[in-house]
Image (tube, rainbow, N blue to C red):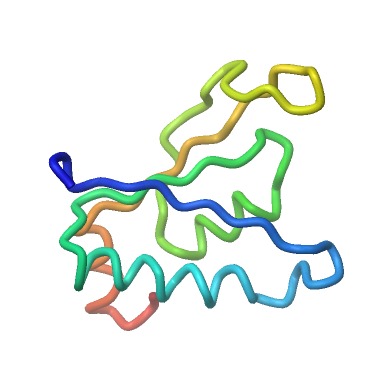
Amino acid sequence: MEHERTEIGFALSRLYWNQGIITEATRLIIEYGFTHLGFNRIEGRCSYNNAGSARAMEKLGMKWEGILRGQLKMKGEFVDQRMYAILRDDFDSVNNSSTL
């Protein structure tokens, strides 16, 4: 907890995609991280071509920070990752406007 930051990630069977499950569950995790664990920053990454995960992080108030080139090896190939993050100040701003 020295740096007051953490990472989140999620995986869900295709049978349950596009139902808001990830967004709803992760929203609670983010809230808990800021309000009870004292984090200042929560990061998330997804494969560059994973539009669904990127959209979920954006809905959660996470901001796109850039591309991590060749960051992860999947099925024998290096893939680029999108990096997203939300800061406690972002969370407070969004939470006070009742949209998170």
